[in-house]
Length: 107
Image 1: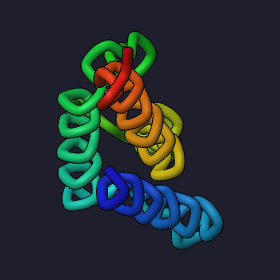
Image 2: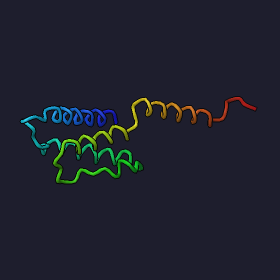
Image 3: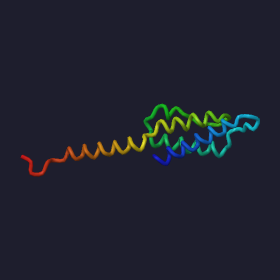
Image 4: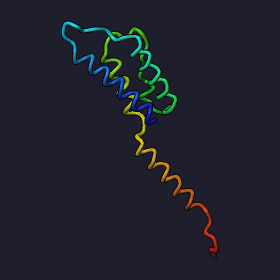
C-alpha cells in the first residue's frame, strides 16, 4: 500500500500546485490527472473494502475543480493504513501465532 499512498500524495501535490497558480493562468483539471486519481481511488477501495468513508468518495465526471480531486486523494491517504500500522499488525499476528503453539516439553 506504500506505493499507492505515494501515488496519492503525488496527485495531491499536483492539485496544490495547480491551485496555487490560480491567477490569470487558471486552468481546469486535466483528463490525465483525473484518470490517475480515479485509478488510485478504485485500487484503494479494493484494498480497504470496509472503509465507509472511502466508499462514499466518488470521482465521477464531470470533475471541474482541482479541489474535488485533491479531497478524494486526501481521503485515500487517510484511509490507507500506514507502513508502521501494517508492520505492527504483522508483528502482533506473529506473536499471537507463537502464543498459540504448545510449548515443547511442557507438562
